[in-house]
Length: 431
Ligand SMILES: Cc1cc2nc3c(=O)[nH]c(=O)nc-3n(C[C@H](O)[C@H](O)[C@H](O)COP(=O)(O)OP(=O)(O)OC[C@H]3O[C@@H](n4cnc5c(N)ncnc54)[C@H](O)[C@@H]3O)c2cc1C
Image 1 (tube, rainbow, N blue to C red):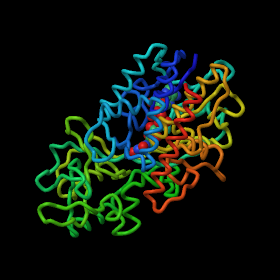
Image 2 (tube, rainbow, N blue to C red):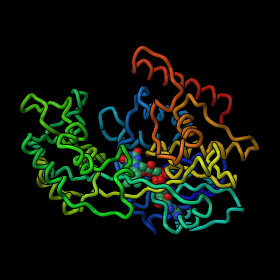
Image 3 (cartoon, rainbow, N blue to C red):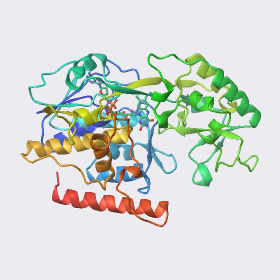
């Protein structure tokens, strides 16, 4: 029997993959009885911010990670493909359909017993435990975990607002992906005058104060728009509001700035503002976003929020298989180990499940080849950090270098080498 705490991206992969292989699992999830600050439903594997799982192209780091996860039989990816919504080259999902389906599948697998309960403590000397409680681990659990792992590290992450399709002024907007690659995004153009008015209001708007907030602790990929705006008048035009490759059919030109809206659900009733994470006060969000002409009357159904994410100093306390060095029966998985991102978290769950299976079969645990994206990420987290761990997402810089004429050729080689290495690894060490 394996006890998994937290049915998020990581916990769902662990429970599913163990149970499919005949291991009995008790899966503890506190929602909906006790909610976190960032989740909105009681479903497993809820995506708390963007509904995009990013590129599927294996010459992108995220695309390569997906290809590797598929080789392990990832339930998260299977469901993502089932519940995808149009979003150009990216794999984006209907977040409710996605989370609901993962829940149905995991709850329906023989050998999984789901217990809806907050875990605040367990006997560290009894049984096998996996802590997959994520960036919003409950306070009660944190107190107990401190006894096991010492102090936590933290950083700040923020969420973008979602608006209803019917409230967007679609007459002023235009459809299209960058460089004419498709027609999936709604683009809300701004003239220079409109942009400058919006920018001024944004930098002057009131934000929600947070205890311990420090700009240095913002996760670099998830900077709130007001923080980006404060770094210079044009910063947004080179960031989330860049018009590059987006031609407004009314003028035949790129607008001065653009806000892109990505579809959220299968029916296309909700759209999120791409890259518009924010911690503005809610009234301020409404006021400032209404300065974007297409969003003048936008109905915001989810406001942007900021969250303090915790994680453990994994290199100090975990072994290469994500087990506590001092207690080999306690594993950690998901964002709490210091990986960042939905798929990175799910992938760490697959890795932990893989090694638990091996251990239960009396075999020794294995690291994944360093040439693979998963292997390189986990190796980085545990073995390659100087000082305190900073959250890490997949990127080609983690892999041992390859030679190649240009970036594209090198990326192709990274991908081919990774998939070959993983294929050989799984042929020898199938699970
Ligand atoms: C504000 C914010 C925005 C983010 N935006 C993005 C993004 O846009 N793209 C991206 O790729 N990643 C994003 N991330 C990161 C992403 O959410 C996480 O990487 C991912 O969800 C983590 O997966 P996980 O399984 O570790 O945790 P989660 O998916 O959070 O799952 C943990 C589960 O544990 C449960 N739980 C917590 N404590 C207890 C307890 N004591 N007992 C029982 N159950 C418990 C929770 O209810 C939850 O279901 C964001 C994170 C945050 C916080």
